[in-house]
Length: 77
Image (cartoon, one colour):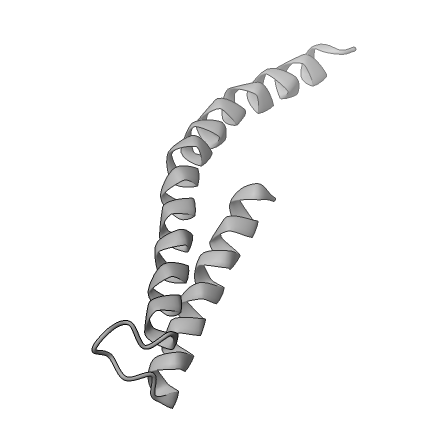
């Protein structure tokens, strides 16, 4: 191992805790958001809220669910 390689390894090791810390902060919030959006979608589709499940409401809720799913997959990846 050369000195340049050792410096590269140290630089990479310095970046990882920052990314890991960000993931630890965003992870629980992303899970909570996904669960909340799924719950709201269920409640609206089951007719348990005063919100009528019109086409636009359903599409909007499904888009929010997809967005939270993408955020979760991004964090996991």
